[in-house]
Amino acid sequence: MSVAHKWLEQDPWPTKQMSRDMLESRIERVLTLTNIGYLGTVSKSGSAIVSPLEVYAEGLSVYFLPQPGSPKLKAMQRDPRVSLAIANPMAGWACVMGAQFFGNATLLEVDTPEWEHGMKVFKWVGSSFELGRDLSGPPRTMIARLDPDRIVYTEHLLRKQGYAPRQIWRKDSDDVQVVQGTAKFKPV
Image 1 (cartoon, helix red, strand yellow):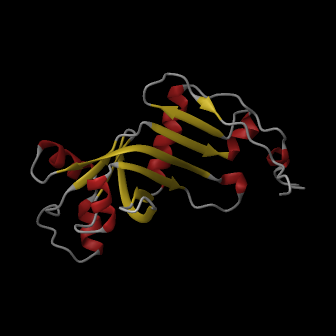
Image 2: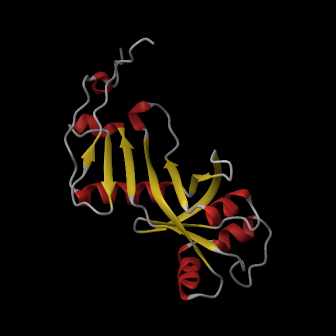
């Protein structure tokens, strides 16, 4: 039993939906709290490849630099379907907050207008400085953009306010969906 956070034990979890605007605002907040994400791609054999990378967002669109010649870049060239998880560092379930993005990654070729824009969103100067790279201009490599089709947002503090802790955003729907959860695990 949690003395400090009794609302975490509420069962079943609340199912109240947030408005789309409220959900988008929460997702954008997660995108400002950290610049590290975990990208999942599909390997040639069909298995998952997950790797950490640096991310920056404009609205709900997320930009990242795939390493030239890397397995993740080759995977996206074969199959653009990706999943990207971004989470605030956790110090217990009371403060867990994160989002998982699903969609197709678009690889933006160097010197195209989309690449130029992406390099304005991606904070390449700080990253390049830290890695000892040339600061005279952005890296001459493709940048990737993920425009999500679906985002699963999780924040357990929402339960205290009566909202479902897992809210689902979809690009092609104005309705927010929720996932019913439970505090109790059933033995296998």
